[in-house]
Image (cartoon, rainbow, N blue to C red; front, side):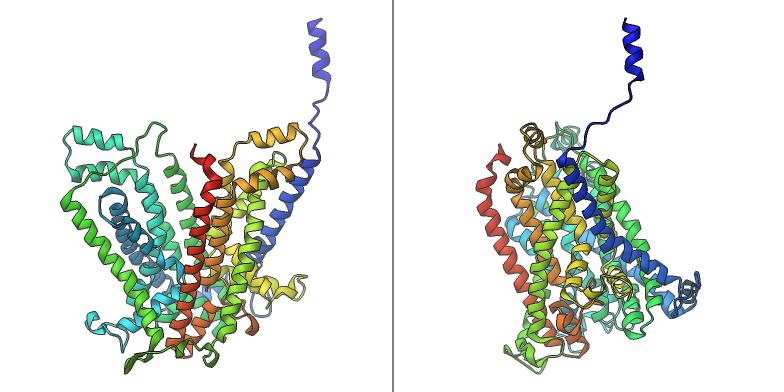
Length: 568
């Protein structure tokens, strides 16, 4: 009887569970998100790849454009220049950021909160600001030009100094996290064995933070080698890959050669991206569930030395920001240093005037609104959809790609894709919408990972209970998931807003006369020789981003009452 039953059972076809209404809706929504990412990321990059192997007439020429690029010594030198300048600046940033993070996490110095906040200030400024401030400090008429002993700030020295300023907080954030997750038991064991402080540092501290160091190194290297603002303002005749793209596209209208340089710039960014992702995965598993967080003990000589380092770095940050602010207020540099607000009268300055500032506010608001909506819904569908797993995986991988694509590469790809006459989306070219799309795509990955982290903290039983009660998933999403993830949603929206205000590289190819942004206006004013007005506009960006960040802090403080369940 059992054998007969087994035979009948084996003969029955395997029946897949029915795909209910929620499954169809979530699968369809996931497909829409995947198509959106493909249209705003994959297709533009594919079109740019095609352009790089064509001539001006659209005829396929293979690798002839690449051969022409490397045959030109002035152009090919940009590759070596970009690599060594980025590498040297990265070493300086990592050394300073590690010492600063070590002081904040492994010492008993006073005013840690103040130092931490001050170190994050460069995040509120466009990269152009540091270059402008350095010109006022060390330029031909700079206050401290003698400090360079006859060397010029225009070139690699200025690029390295400006890059160190604006990438410092990016490295600091990663290293603070890496140094904050150390197992205190290892230090207790080292102390009980009589190991010296130096031996403990080299055998416990550094190995524990090695993946954070690797991650920070490649993040900073990518940011510097793909940056356009600093080398454009202070690079002089020193060629870099990012400025080569701008010269080929804007200066010579050679879009095919611009595509070649963009693809060359994409290679180190891709390598750095994969190494950084590997390091992050390794770092996340470095702390066991039984670990005891390390609590530093007072040590006078160490604390005083670290306090000195932190004070010096903080003074440098405040000095550059203060120099930019003073330059925007000085009446006629360097002959009349009396204070005036006339440089803030952008109506008489080249570059877009107050309209550009208003455009930036609108673009940042649109980016924060639509970007947060797309990212959070997309992350929810990736995390919660239990059908069409290949589509979930593909969508998640698409969401990670923007982190590896430099802003200038994405902007140039948008020109090729959206400006094509046969593209039905051609009407977006030259509008505010394409600036919003490019900015969302450029900063999509970090926001996506933030949303996923928040969603993974929620108990999956919410969806199970809702399904057992036949409650539609969208009702659970609106009434349960969204209220519980409000802090993350707020973080994502602020991240989009501030980056939309400060970005240059992602939009420098895409703006029209009526959609000029404040960050682009800074660049145009500096090109026109109106450096004081450029400093003033840069300070307006800093003040706006700072005000939004203060508002964010206030809202986050108020939301803590609604998030008490997280601390139970």
